[in-house]
Image (cartoon, rainbow, N blue to C red; front, side, top):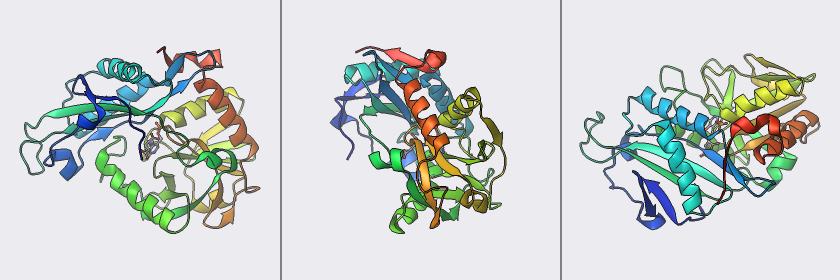
Length: 307
Ligand code: PPE
């Protein structure tokens, strides 16, 4: 269960959590043409807080809406301010932030017509996405029987609600089969991403990740590529096959919710030594130092706030 906060920002107002409701004929509920973001705020070592890459997430949100042709009555700056206001109103020093832009009720039929474009921003405390143990020990995953979207079937650069039916299918199958998460292959059979994460592998101290063309351009992915470069690693964006993953020294997922989660087993094959590898461990600890405001070199990624 999501841990309730006091209010949710809803079309420009702070609305009590239990009153932030919509009509059952909400267009997006039927057809999936809404867009969302996942953002994390962290409590910093010095007692302040920060939202990680907040502006970048709001720009991606607006672009996701643009891809779907939704006319949003707010700018990325408006939504940045609204997110910080919501964290403060709810007295949250750290939280998961979920903005959602959706087509409201009005006409039915796939054409959204003049239906209102509505926006919410919800905030709540959310711990480790794949469990506390996952961050330390790594997880077991399977390659899904479901393929990731073809780039001209769904718009993979849009974090669109409907795109996530594919994620729900893959994740549900993986969990039912006794795994923690799924890896999706694209329609050519190459590795694309997890149900809600980007993927990296390490071979001989070189870090590889699939090109961002067919996957969500993750901000954690982008941050990890920059961080890896600064730590002296070579990062290559190249096509990856599932058997390359089986033989890699390390494989890990990255995402706002998943942070950096090591993968210790894929399709019943042990990856590396079957635990978090040295590169994943170093990158994860450096990432946590950054998001807790302990590395001034990355201060430009932090949107600081105080309660
Ligand atoms: N790929 C997918 C499909 C994805 O959903 C996410 C984020 C990423 C990559 C990583 O993107 P970024 O967060 O910018 O590094 N998934 C969000 C939703 C997860 C959920 O279950 O809900 C998230 O991590 O917040």
